[in-house]
Image 1: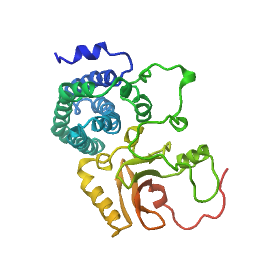
Image 2: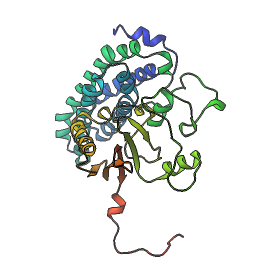
Image 3: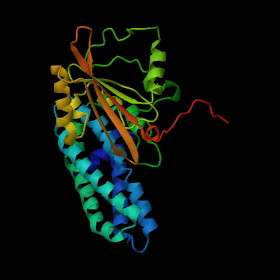
Length: 325
């Protein structure tokens, strides 16, 4: 038995690590069921189990955007690189199997499914023996208490939402957009209410940014993430764990070199814009990076903007009249 398990059992309900282990139990059950089912004999049963297992993406994103930033603050940067790469390898296997699922190519499913199962088992083993025990040693109780709102924004694999940690009275709940608690951040908060043109309250600014049909992430001149908007339909998940995080840890390891090159060119003043587009979950995503400079042309950071342009690409001709029913 994992020597860390007794520690987990003693944790209060809702503690982030205890929630991870509840997901762990669910994943183990799904892996056993997936290993037993034959896609040839009962494709629908296999497909249902597989789809439930793919919600492991929420677990990956929580780790990458919530847990890893806290580990970085304590000097442990390994998970942000090695384990994130592991996540990406598993994502590739899931995408491959989804292609075979759509084709109902059962021979290819049977051939490739064991790689996914064994990969996830290996990941869980590393989590159990190294990631979570070390995290419990490094993070303070106060830090664990900061996880819930960000975790909730990303979501869990579980059918029922975990109880808040620490327990909160409903009346005490503060939505992130209304949370003005001062935190120990790695960048200055001076002049944060200055706007160039017009007059808006902080509430209006939050509403404006939340309803923009694009994802925005702002990295300052010191390569620290200082802001992202909280749209309801974000292309890529974000949580407050990335605030104050170095930009090199906010992207999958396979794309870090490209991101760092963009930042370096922006800082040098040789480039001002970089853009990419690709297919993601059946949608066309357009990503643009813009260098931010002050009136003296001094580099002040970079804004990353991501947008789902699938429906925009389909536009043809003209539309000049309102067609509401």
